[in-house]
Image 1 (cartoon, rainbow, N blue to C red):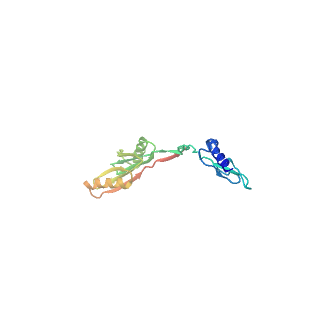
Image 2 (cartoon, rainbow, N blue to C red; image 1 turned 135 degrees about the horizontal axis):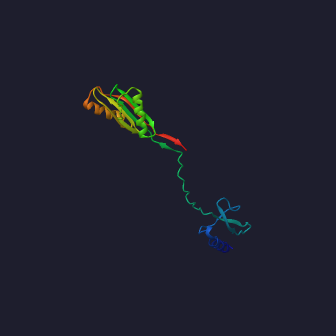
Image 3 (cartoon, one colour; image 1 turned 60 degrees about the vertical axis):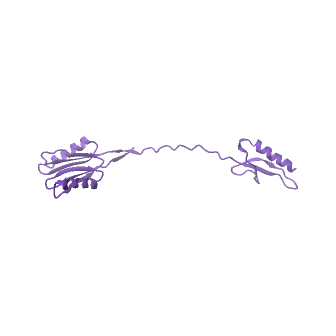
Length: 181
């Protein structure tokens, strides 16, 4: 009888098909549970009832789902600024958050003239950064950089090489504007 049980188990291993794949069946008590497949019955004997045999379901590797790239929620618009001083009257015209270099320059010149400047000229136009105007006793110049601190340090160092009483007269930063879709 035991020989019969072993032969049955051996045949189940080969007959179980793709799901069995050379794994040995195990006793599964009251029948297959989660992640199990019925393989057959182990014969009973000596007053014992036949016992169900099961295989574990093979773990099927699911193909990795390709994650979709995130959809942009909007876009960044770079902005421009400009500084337009007038040597006549010590007037400073400035513009911030313009959508183009030309617009920033036009607005800075208009600001300078509206404040009474006579010979207003664009000294600097910049975008997505900071700019400063540095004054000394004889020195006037503009500088731009990533931050006001960096532009100020650069401008003050340059002023101190040739002048005295150097100071930051004007500072501002343009910031990009986020537009949601």
